[in-house]
Length: 336
Image (cartoon, rainbow, N blue to C red; front, side, top):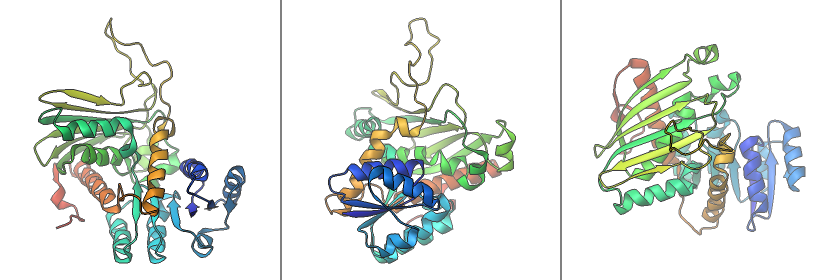
């Protein structure tokens, strides 16, 4: 199998290394807007660098992996669909609903595969939580608490093109909430604070956000995020039911300190970032894509799943802006 990879940045380099080692992948063609970076990655892995994205679609590949800048995702997805090629794309499809719906329409019209990169679906802790919910082990689920806390903020230049904290960061929590519980979000109430620095206000974004979400069966969920958590990278989910309560992401590297005399000690080596925390999940999602391309499994996260997570993020932006609860029915893109 020959795979074209577009985008040789941090996550692109990680996926390229995973694919280069995969027994079913014979070769990679790697490109990036920074040709020096693409050549350096290709040389390091013993793969081929291409001058640009055009060559990915003309040199003959069996599938495409998109890890380019967010602004390029939708156009590249559409181009791959028109070429009849299966695609793996890091989230999001686009930072807005219009771009997302246009790209999805192209994929649907072509009948091609689009697998989205929501790696938490491949994390052992979240998969175990999903099984606990689905098996009835927790009894009636009544409360879910999710959080994402980055250790350090992104560069200031990234914020205006990120889509904002709900679309860029909390969208992972929105997706995994749906996946673990098997329930849809029907209403959100969101707020945020931009007290963390001028760069957030200049980007019309917030550095800390909180959302209350109501699921279709009445389960209540909260999701919080912050761009600066000096203790370390912290991603967790707690699920409370009438019979039991479980936690995802609670281990000896969770960056949290108990104030109780008999509490656990502080983490010796707290997580520092998403690639470290979710490395096995990132590897598993790309391996799953290879299986999808080979026809060995169903698509584990298609573009319409990503659309649903984006709709929740859009509802949160509207809620924060207008300071009111927002029903998901107000947001475009709902399948009827």
